[in-house]
Image (cartoon, rainbow, N blue to C red; front, side):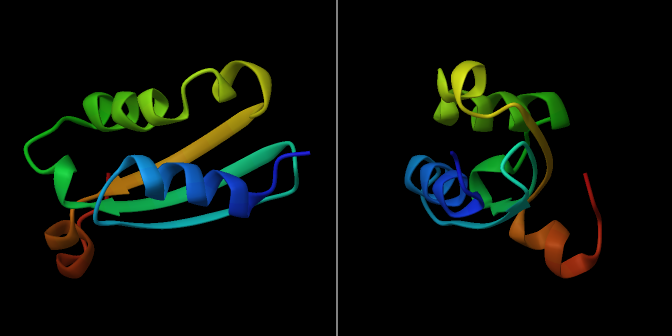
Length: 81
């Protein structure tokens, strides 16, 4: 069974300089991802970046993942995507 720590590690290793927090119950997960690589990207592009890092795990191991994606500036300024 996939754990929040597994997902956190996969995302963090695929998005350099990211701060990732994942919570979940083994079926449904929520992630907060703060990454400077999101700068200038739309919400859809940010999510595509995360899905790209997770690859086939999204089809086979992770059943539901909701995420908040922010740049460090957005996180520090209170803006949320």
